[in-house]
Length: 263
Image (tube, rainbow, N blue to C red; front, side, top):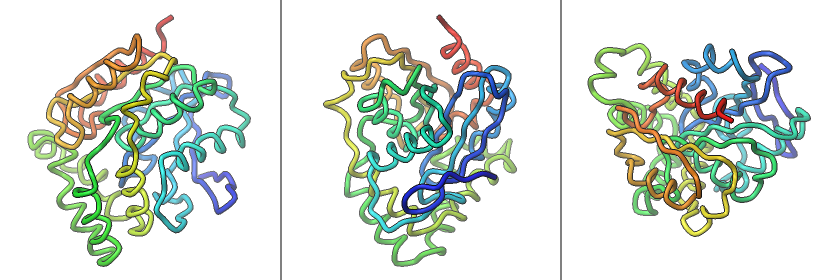
């Protein structure tokens, strides 16, 4: 485990792969940590120096008072790159990580080579979804996180996947129960307040959008919207619910690698 010192605390990160390879940054979803990408590491490290991190409020990273914003989380990524002396990198983010990726594409495209956003949208949900969740988590603490874990299986994975792969599903959903309630609520606010629908056209870096056919949280329509508003963007869809990188596994990894490796 390694940490970068930010002004307010430490950001946990992990580097894998050849030291001289191009850097690929992976950004986790709301309620998970950097280990949500474990299924991709063997394939990705054949080609890239893979940089994973726990988003502020998650895993072993700093938990500061909320609410957070996607801009704030995007600046954390830039601070991480600066601290590690990485001028440019590929970036792949899922759900909330996909929102961070959109912010970077809009505001810091000069730091990106290529961008992949997965199971995300330019706007995810509305206050009627997020505010009751924030209130419940701040009120009930760890008990609320356990309840969210138990409810998340159906959102994050299709029934056939979770029944066939109970250990894999449990490994991911247990991350949610272990997340700081304060950090989770602060990140919920960041997702609630993000809206990039009017700014997507300013993304000029090569972009791949990935969606899950059975994703009720961020349906394929949100991915199609992003693709339609970013010139030259590519689109891919897998039989998966919200965590397509886990459910689609090798097929997800292969599609991302094909995109990143293309001239």
